[in-house]
Image 1: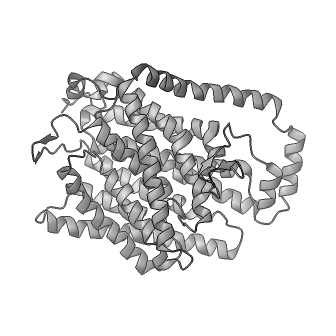
Image 2: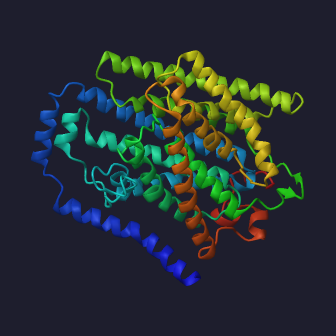
Image 3: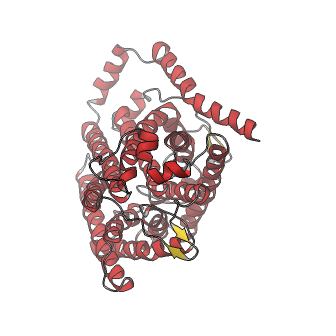
Length: 452
């Protein structure tokens, strides 16, 4: 079994190189010439809202890209100092891997057109993104590459969720190998069901900006990783939990606020149009609702933590309350009133605080609290959509949640186990105790302080 799985892993790792070679060959042989591209762009200039819509994608994409810095800072602050350099390295590299794989195969799988089988459940449009149908997308009112860029920056979010959960006890290369499969196949298949016009779209499911498609996808993959990799050494003793506080709470606060900022691009630009007064009004309402959901999440988490922990308000609960509120509103940030947005976010904040001790009881070690904030709140946000959106129903929403749970959990578990029995996932006990900065990176984030 080990040799067979090893060949599978080697093949999976060589696949990106094959795709890259195929992409280079296409660029030489089939890319439209400069004259054709200029003619298409000239025709697009006369399409109403072409520039406005394209700018919405580009600016929204830039804002969402800044979320990578938010995840990086949040995770670096919530790990121990001896693992901080490892964590920021993971975040920079995973963003790069995600970008490459979304070009190499992810975009075409996520938006396959008619290239699907099994009633839209499995896209078959493999291969690198070719630059799109310039004429068709120009007629639709946006520049093809602006759409690709906006969709690309989403994919790293799912991988960042996994990164935070399994921090401090997974080696870099196996984690990046998992990221390859997650961003090249697992995530694109999930988004194809809805945003790509596949199975869920045909069955009435609604997820405006990705409570399930993005956040729960990352959450399920993270949960499988936490279960298969196991807890950090010394985290649990019988029924006792050994707290392992983060090294830099102000840095984690900065990361939280960057994520809060980035969510305006995440949700706002998912309106996908900015060429009319109605579009701009919708984007504005989404901004307001997104902000108020975060407000509700923070305040509810603060109050709940104060009650549960006898007046001690854990800062990490407050931070994740903001994220939980934001995830909760992401499935439908336009339809609710501002007051309802506060309530939706507040429930998310409460769920975060309640879920953290539950995970500890189950001995599931989630270093940054990503499973409560992204998975649990992603489910909540998706299931509450019909309350404010009359065009949806609870059965279709549950179908989307359930299908995503099964597919992502099964495929992620297969990949995690394959990596465990081939490359190995965990460092040695000695390396884990010394810290992954020394063992994996070769330098420390805070060399003037003793590792702890």
